[in-house]
Length: 300
Image 1: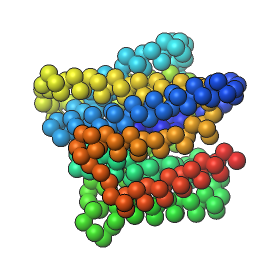
Image 2: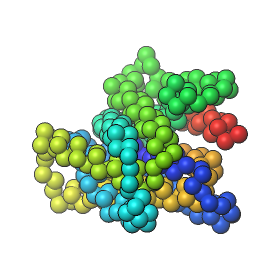
Image 3: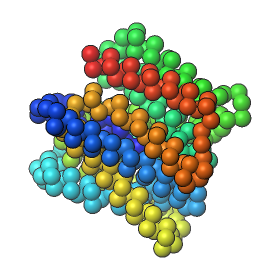
Image 4: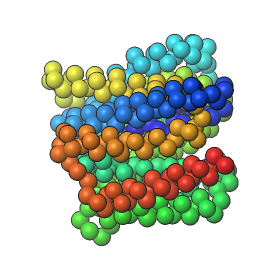
């Protein structure tokens, strides 16, 4: 899944000073990140049609190493010190769950439609932040969560022939990703961005390597190039997100996550000639509006 919001471990407090030049740079980084993550998802959809999902997940993490190494170099080796390895392992587990469910659902669902359903992740974050992080969630945000999930129902149209197993897989990915973000919030209180990204990718890579023998298919030359590009682009997306939240507050950057729908719609049409119908766009508009309202309330 695409990795918007402060999922790279960046909290608003990491921004040293809010100045227009840095905010503009932060927005540029987050736009580049969202584009990169959506391209990565498109590559995963392409590869998932002919290769085991375990292989797609493994190469996504393996070829993300170079950009993550740049992020670690930027933060310094001292930034990798941690006493919370179990927390990093938990984050990696939720991240892997999100990837497996999302990439599997992408096999059978248009890219833009899958992205629209995945927008439920911030709704899950708000709903779970109370019982898990003991954060107060007021009645207005609860109302936004409920209306947002109604938007998800508009997209999936339960009772018809559209709510199939792949839609449930995307919802499961959104839930897993929400838990991934909540663990990130918890870790970000004491861990550096470099440590969070490094340990999550490293643990996910080890788990992916262990699962690889259960579903291996030697990639062709052309597909190997796509595998490499997918990992590099995904890793660059994580780096761009980290840099975005270094330069601008989360409240400014979070709304730009929704640009993934525009990029996803464009890529879906260019590659697979997919074009979501009006119902999908209506449901996506409801979910996005509720997400933006929640962001506004949390900022206040």
